[in-house]
Amino acid sequence: MDAAASTDGPDEIIHQSLRLRIMATLNALPPNELMEFTRLRAVLGATDGNLGAHLTTLENAGYVRVEKEFVARKPRTRAGITARGRTAFMRHVAYLRELLDRPAAE
Amino acid sequence: MAVTHEDAAAALRLANEAGERSAMLRGYQSTAPHLILWGVIYAVAYAISYGRPAQANIAWAVLIVAGSVASMVIGGRDRSDRAAGSKKWAIVPALFVTFLAFIMATAAVMQPQDPKQMAAFVPLVVAVAYIVMGLGAGRRIAFAGVALGVLTLVGYFGFPAIFMLWMAVVGGGTLILSGLWLRRV
Image (cartoon, rainbow over all chains, first blue to last red; front, side):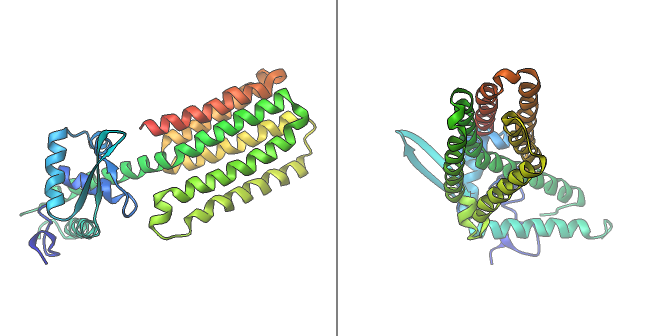
């Protein structure tokens, strides 16, 4: 198991706030469903460059798949969460919840 | 990486908000084509009820069956139904049968004397359904229900002579515009 997806600590790739919100947004979609880049950008209130960079990071980690195609001669980019990404996200959320359940002084 | 309680709480809040917003928008996308479809059916059926009342019953029957089949097709194409491999698609026909049985039972018990009574009652029930659904799935759906219900009552009490035409234009139009509104989010 890679360090990013360790159960012992936070997922360092997902923990960054925009990447966390990207993963939460895509995780709410049904399996195999993709969301258009422009829609994702609007939902998250992110800029093109920022969103693109973080999507690339998530894609390189295998958490997200990005599909680029042409529809009616216009480029369309869509992103969706992978099974690996879904597992990593759930694990990260479980870690955060577990952390909150611990006594604050610990 | 050290994550504090505050970090964890903030991160969970962000994740929850993003997930809920995503699910709500997904719900809007799924609902929009149904609203547009039934808006068109309302417009056509009420227009026939207004212009050719003798053909109204058969027109409604044909359009309701056609609309239900179309709704099932739309629901079946919805990825959320297919992807989970669930039987979620079966909800649409089950809801339709329940709704139809409720309308027929109510008509049998209440014995309406004027066709306008049933013509107003059905969209009022639909409006309540949208409001209830919208309370959980997103306020835009609830707004669509409120608009349909209020405009139905305005037409029924305010413009009884042209109520069928009112429902064709305003009732059907409300659903179509609501569907387009949901799609734009």
